[in-house]
Image (cartoon, rainbow, N blue to C red; front, side):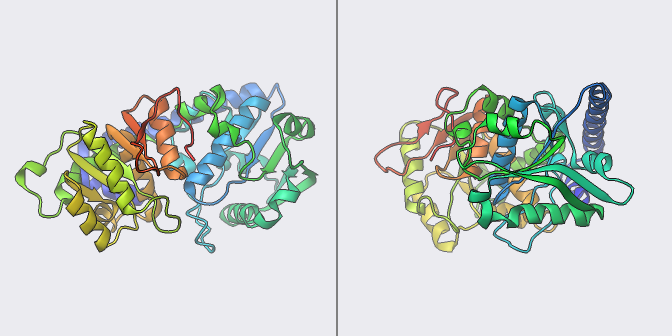
Length: 392
């Protein structure tokens, strides 16, 4: 996977810049390793409780579960195991692991939550017989019985990758109306915890983000390599405009909009267009619009071309530009980073894809963010630190 990323770098930036990026990336990894080793040596004096959580659904739902788990770890003083991430679970047979530390900066996250990579955890916990014994399997049996594919996929993928067998000493049931104290109480004698709770549990972390939620989001950063690659793709956007004029070859203010169509349609294209026009009529100025949506067809593009007064590109133009070196998962991460770096982001409601970007941008003070409205008479809402949340 990293070889593919380096191919993009070779195509887009100079050799000296490549060297700089690789040095930065290796420096970050080595510095994180040194920090973690020093923490590990210190922790030999104290007992540590490891928390490994099950993630659900697509990549951004998995990120939401992971952030929830980081909050639980902070509140209960656990060391979080950085879990494997997967492509969208809609592809039921897909078990390819996406390694979190190839996309996100662990050194930043480690400032606010104690963590251990899955590599380190497996190495530390696996015995000479290639068995990894986890102390407690904690789950909400009544709520997750029809979601057992998720923990099974996680465990089987790790077993196959590391050629080990994972088992549990004991299983503990959690109540339907779960709270943080119940997890702490029932895990009191557990040295390692494999936690499977329902996706909707602790929704308050995202509907009304408190200091812990904000702190985790403030320390979720993509790696310097991902940031650099996204910037190169941003600079290439004007060249992807169909029938571009000389005045359109450069842009000064980029806006990115996420349109949720396809498997779940939040708003139709006409509604998105109306929301964009309301912003423009309210003097929100941008010179180029990039539309994040893999499901736009030729009819949609024609509709956008006829209605929008600004030049635009779409995901498909960009993906066609880089498809021969990037898989869909890496492209999604890069396109989210493009939205993060853009001066203006227009977020869809009812989608964790938009919510992930929205929370990061607002809490990192990175540009201006609007949440679109499904009420066509209501203009998009400016999102600030005072009203930031997962909009549903």
